[in-house]
Length: 586
Image (cartoon, rainbow, N blue to C red; front, side):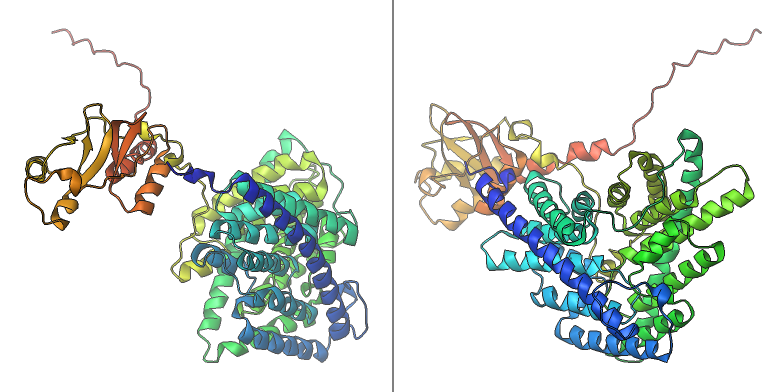
């Protein structure tokens, strides 16, 4: 019996993965520091015509024709980089998912350099993106590179990719727990001990690096944590429904504009340049729609913007982001969605206060909940959005409205939209991505419960002629050969008899497989499946203490799925027995 297939990664290999994940955590912290400061430097040089290592506020930008020129030059450089590394186009997460699902988690090493550089150029010249998406892809590319340099399995390489991505997010936002959940929801497609431990190690180290490099405070200033209890939950449920609709508009609008770019009669190389002209024109009217927008999110949460300014900023950011990302330039999705969601939530809070005076809804609280609910619904990563905002505020009171709004937003968006922001591009390429984790019954079902116990066997001294006759009569595909004590000595198949041209009186034992692959009744069905596939056999004798007690075939393994199918079938509910009607009197 081989080592259990479900073991996956031994303790020694898990320790090795964890050490590598710690290194990725440090690398993610360093990469985040370099990327954010590079964005700051390029933004100051290209748009403010000065030097500086701190992200400037676009409220101080006085745009002119130079804004369009800077955006076009930046887009041209991004297109040149895309010729060298095509994976940098877009926000990059769909490409990382595709690499995990179809290429054994192999991401080109060029992505580790080209993605942050292209993102810094795009954002630094006015692109309406955040830095978190590119740094997540950069961290994932670093994890893939390590997994290609060292002798690891594809599954372990996938864990390194996810660990690098989690490190990138934790280092950027200082939200290590949300980073772990993001990797699980969007990249890992599994939840296991062997994946969870390296993820936590990488995110913890990267979170520590964030505190050392950027400080321990939250990325955004947040409103006072004053959330009403049960009485206001219906209002947050209504907000969640609105966020679900916003997520649909946000996603389908992006898909529509991407489709328009694909139909343009110009080479794809020029698409980012066209997109740059588009978002720069928006920026001429609303400068705060450009750049990473972290300070704009803070102002929205703290209620520093008037109602009109909120509406203009939200619409301008959405339009600029649509055009920029659809053009195939390099940038992230998280910060733009957070700003659009926050402005929507703040406007909803102001509208409720105007319609129903006395509600005393806090627009900042609505903004905080809405930005997470919108992001979770658009990306189908609701748990990430909930944990992210909880880490952002550090206040348990936000959990109640946040959970309710997020799941309602997801329900609405799922009902109206087949694919998410992360999967639409993959669906167009013919790749189906499932986001639900289901119990694999083969990992919980024993061979004993599915094997055939009434086994037709042949005696050890059976001849080839006798075996031929049994095959003709019963139609079975194989027979174990057993001795008087019930020990399985060999297994003879119909193919064994056809391959060997021997006399009919020769013992069947001479053409049979003398060292049959056997399995224990206590083994799991997944172990039996692994043996059948690895050894290229159709039948597994089930043996206990050397004695044959059953046989397990491919059909038996498929039967283990029957219970799972039955669990999905609706069953009649419990009903009261009906009373017999009394016949009417004649």
